[in-house]
Amino acid sequence: MTVLVVGSVAFDTVTTPFGHKEKILGGSATYFAYSCSFFAPVNLVAVVGEDFPPSYRELLEKREINLEGLQVRPGETFHWGGSYKYDMNEAETEFTDLNVFEDFHPDLPPSYRSSEYILLANIDPHLQLEVLEQIENPRLVVGDTMNLWIELKKETVQEVIRKLQILIINDAEARQLTGEVSLKKAAARILKLGPEYVVVKKGEHGALFFSRRETFSAPGLPLETVVDPTGAGDTFAGGFVGYLAKMGEISPSALRQAVIYGSVMASFNVEDFSLDRLKNLQWDDIIRRYQEFKSLTLF
Amino acid sequence: MTVLVVGSVAFDTVTTPFGHKEKILGGSATYFAYSCSFFAPVNLVAVVGEDFPPSYRELLEKREINLEGLQVRPGETFHWGGSYKYDMNEAETEFTDLNVFEDFHPDLPPSYRSSEYILLANIDPHLQLEVLEQIENPRLVVGDTMNLWIELKKETVQEVIRKLQILIINDAEARQLTGEVSLKKAAARILKLGPEYVVVKKGEHGALFFSRRETFSAPGLPLETVVDPTGAGDTFAGGFVGYLAKMGEISPSALRQAVIYGSVMASFNVEDFSLDRLKNLQWDDIIRRYQEFKSLTLF
Image (cartoon, rainbow over all chains, first blue to last red; front, side):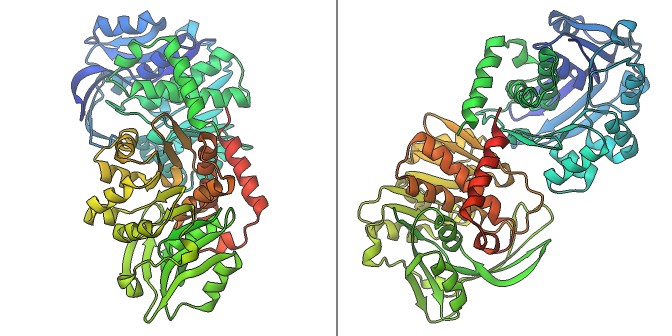
């Protein structure tokens, strides 16, 4: 089943202890779509400027990501600059040039409107609501957000969350959103807003999955080298939603497996800049790493 | 089989968001011994002052912890004061009154010398070496340490580590000891020093277990309330070594289960001050929580 994603397609200028890269392909919708495409077809909605290079477009088209909903506007593509220190835990934003993203409104091509699986990647919550208004009969709506929107537009973020089946959020954001230190309490509060499930991403420490009845803990795979953590959360979401769309069912066991597939995709993504690791990924690599997660947790 | 522990028995004065407690029973050997006693008999080596109250002594004796090696010296018992902020991640030390601990040298009663399972809890690494010199033929030697000793006496810490089969250490200490950010690389460096296994504790994020051949990840149990994290690491070690001593074998599967039993005991300990939660613990509670860890990780 096809997955619709709305989010950003961007240039990233990134500095990590492993190097400095200018204007590499990034953005929440990019990472999500590329990761998801290993599991299910993707319809992408975003905006780029006239400076967006054909080679980046081809990279996405090669994985059969549908770009009919990728608007091209006069002006420059959204450009984010950031750096990571030694411990790679948190990006320090150096600049955010919104450019064509400033006036972006998602406009779904008619062929997108019947998409059954929807991922609202991290963008302004007002835009996330605009997307939901254009969707006819979704089977699963999953959403992400970030600290900036929780700080500036908390009520709109909550309005979006009420319309989700699954919220994907990181640990700091879950705490910020709910005022609870305990992630268990934070998740319980989020579930009260409406979603059936919440996934709390914890970076190198893995992810927690909560429903009203159960809790599942996915480990972080201990890695020798993290080259660039940018996009790890979106890559996680891509594997997570992609696997659910591939399976066509939203059972407790499919959800747990989906959290692991999300973790698998994120663990690859951080091993290189931009999509460089995912570009060379084979299905066998994914299966092998899934088995690695199995043996990592077995007792 | 009997487990020998050497470490501290102390008064703790602790402030957390849940309250302030003066001179409650604490110390690395105390937490370890109490936790371990649910699995195996314990011989304890430590020192207290003449002010150490009979009620604290009885608490330990009730669990059949052998106190023949607990020296009573003129003067006051070691007293640590610390506080935890909102996020409970790290204690801020307010004072450390070493008192009788200042001149402590472990002196093993003859009946202790044939102990087969040894836990060198967190004390000056010179004292840890003194204990090993008095042990006849240990089957398993496990050691802990802390940032202070790595900073002040790194070479002695390394000398101890060379004599261990298993090092238990927290994530920050593993990074400090090896200069590696990646815990996988840090563990590989520690294993090169001599130990067969290393356990890296990650607080609320669980623990990682490394051998030369495999990695195991134990989750942290998401808790609604953490009242006081003091002694969590020592309680972990108590469950870990206690289970291995109870099973009498050090197989790969026993080691993984031991990491989980350690996590189970630590998860109880943080639910109240001092030994207050462990005091009321039944064997059934331990088994139930072990099953909770199973369902938390199953996929």
